[in-house]
Length: 347
Ligand code: MRU
Image 1 (cartoon, rainbow, N blue to C red):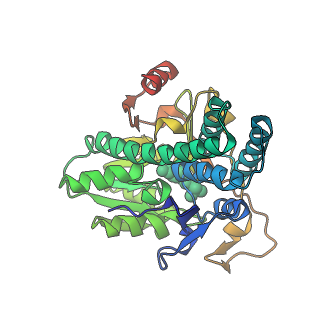
Image 2 (image 1 turned 135 degrees about the horizontal axis):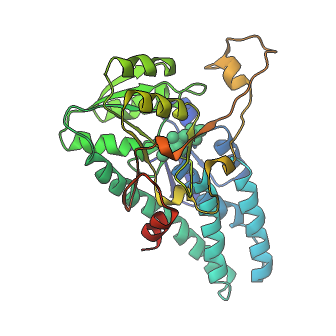
C-alpha cells in the first residue's frame, strides 16, 4: 500500500514531512499558506505531481479567508495566492499546471457566488488528487509491460508514492512489476545532494518487499559496465514539446551512461508534466539551491564553509537519449512528435 503523502483533511493540508524520512514518519497539518510555501521550499513536500497537489490545496488555504464580495476582487486575490505559491520552486511544471487549473475553475464559474466558487475550487483540487492516483496506476501498468522477470532496474531520486498522491511514476512501474511476480531487483542512486534516493526511494521499495540495493551516484557507470543493470526508470519535473526531460540532477549522467552501455532509459511522467509552450529543454527553468546543501551532508559541514558551490537541482536529458516516455495514455517511443503527445492528452 502506498503511503498517503499529501491530502485534504478537516479543512487542512496534511502531508508527510519528507525531510525526516526514513527514520521518522511525521505528518504535518496546516491551513497556513506561508507554512505550506516553506514546506515546498524545504522539500518537506517534493516531487513534481505532489507539488501540483500542494499547489492546488495551497490555493484553497490561501483563499479560504477571502472576504471578497465580487468575483473581480476574489479572482485578484486568488491570482496573488497562486503567484505566491508558484514562487516556491520553478522547475516542476505540475505546480504551475495545477495553479492554472485552479484559476481556470474559478474563472469558469465567475457568475456563481463566492462561497460556491470556494467549494468548486476544493472539488477541483480533490479531482487533481483523484486523477493523479488514476494516472499513477495507468503509468505503472504500461511501464511494467516492458519489464521482464528478474530485471535489474536502476532508478534515481524519488519518483515514488512520496512524489505523487499514490504509486509514483517511475517507482510505480517497479511496484507493479513486483506485484505481477516479476521478482525484480532495484538499484537506487543515493542522489546527492539531498539524498532522495537513499532516504526515500529505498524506504518505499523496502516497504513493498522489493530486493533493493543502494549505490552512490558515482557507482552507476561501474555497475553498468559489469552488466548488472537491464533498464533504467526515472521520473521528470518538466518535459519540453520535443521530449527533452528535466529531472533531478544526475539523471542526465545516467542517460549518457545508459546510451554508452546500451541500457534502455525510460522516463515515466503524466501528461501534466509536459510543457508544450516550450520547444526544447533549453527553455526549462532550472532551480538553483543553497550551496550549503552541497557543503554539508545530513546537516554536517563536510567542505570548507566558504568554498564556492554550484547547486542546480535538475538537469535536462536530451530526447535522443530517452528510449521511451511512459505516460498515462501509453508508451511513446523516439522520435518524439509534439503532435502525438497533444493528441493523446486531448483525445
Ligand atoms: O527536488 P525534488 O526532490 O522535488 O526532485 C524530484 C525529482 O526530480 C523527481 O524525480 C521528479 O519530480 C519526478 S517525481 C514523480
